[in-house]
Image (cartoon, rainbow, N blue to C red; front, top):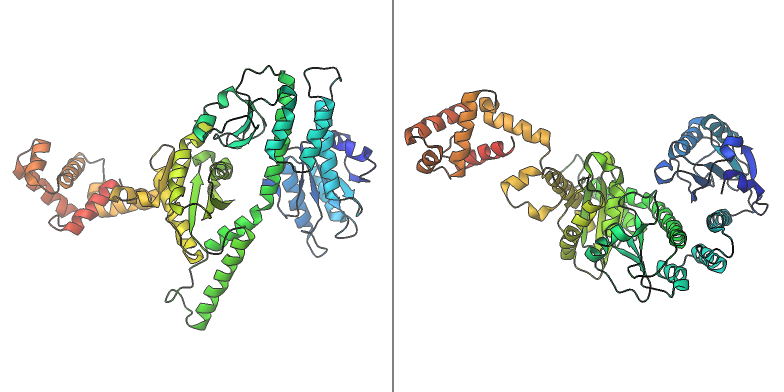
Length: 521
C-alpha cells in the first residue's frame, strides 16, 4: 500500500495538505499513533504517523513543530496524519515544517478515528500481499486470508492465529519461536519445548520479519515432514510479522512510564537524614514526596508498590543500539515475575523486576541460563549484564540500580559475554573489576608511586617481586624459591618497594593497598 492510496479511501475522508508525487508514492510499512513531542525512537521506517497534536499549543515556538517533523524525517516515516479535533485545524507551522523536511501531511477530520485508519491500512496491506489467483495452490485460500485479517484486527492471541493459519494442512505441529528460543505460539498438537531445545531449531526455521533486529526476530518452525508450499509459509510468516509489529507498538506506548520510573530512581534517597542542607520537616517532606512519586510510577508501570524487586542493567558494548530489545527478550522468559524496562544513556538498558508467584532468588539463575542464547543471537556482539541484590522496598531501588551498574562494569571487564550479579563479587579482584577504568588507573598510579612507570626495567623487576611476595602471603623463603633468588635479595628488593611506595609491608592494610594497586594495573 502506498501513501497516495489513503486519498482514494472515501471512508477515511482525508485531506492532503502538502506532498508531491514522489512522497505520495512511498510504500507504507505500518502505522504508529503518538503524541510524544519527540517520537523518533519509537518509529519504524516506512510507517505513517497518526498524531492528535496534543504535544503542540498555539503558544509554542515554530521550533516545536520543526523538531517533531524532523524526528519523523530521521526515522524514515512515510507520512504524517494530523487530527483536527484538538485545535480545530492543522496548524500552519506544521504544514511549513513538513514542507521543509519533505514529509507528506494529511489532515484527519473529527469524524474519522485513528483506529479506523489503522485497521484499514493493515487490512489493505494484507490484501495486497496475499492477492493471488483463486486456483493458485501455493497461496492461502481467500477465506483463510480474510479470517486471519479479522483475527489480527480483533487482537486474537498468537496460538489462535497459528492454528487457523495451518488448519488447511491438518494443523500439524508448528511453532513461532523467538530469537532466544521462547515459544510465542504453538499449535495444539505441538509438544512444549524448552528454550534450549527451541533455540537449537532456529536454523531450520523461517524468519518472520526480515527488518527485525537479531534479538527481536521471530521464527516460523514446522518440525514434521509436512509438505508446505513456500509461498504459503511466507504468507503465514507475514501474519506474524504484523502481529509482532502490533506488540511493539503497544510496548512503545509504555516506554514513557518506564522512563519516568528509572529517572526517579536516580533521585530517590538523596534526602536522607544528615545528607543535605535541610533537616526536620523540610527534609522529611522532600523524601516523602519522592517516595510518593516512585510509588505512583510503579503503579503506572503495572508493578506492585511493595517489593521484592531486582534491578538488571545491560549493555551490548560499542554496538549498543539494541540493548533494550535484547534485555526485553530475556525478561519475557521469566514466569512468575513482572518487569518494566527502559533505555538509558550510552546505549544501555535497565529493568526493574517484581516478583509475583515466583521467588526473587530465581531471577539470577534464570537469567544466567538464558545468557548464552542471547549471545547466540549475534555472535559478533558481546552482551554484558549486571544484577543487583534484592531490594525489599521501593526506597532500596536506587541502591539496587547503583549495584546493577557496578556489576555491569565488572561484567564488561571480563571481555566475554558475561552476566554478573552483585553477589558474585566475593573477592578483591572481582570487587575491583566494577571500578571504572579511569579510577582503577589513577589508584594504581598513586598507590605504586614511581613503580607505576612500567618502562623502567628496574621498576618492572621490583613489581614482579612484589607480586610474587604478596601471592606467597609475605613468605620470604617461598618468594625466593619462586623467583630463584637468595632470600637476602628478596629482602633488599622489598625494602626498595617500601621506600619507593612509602608503604610498610609488615602491615596488613599496606599489603592490601599494594595488592589492589597491582590488580588495578
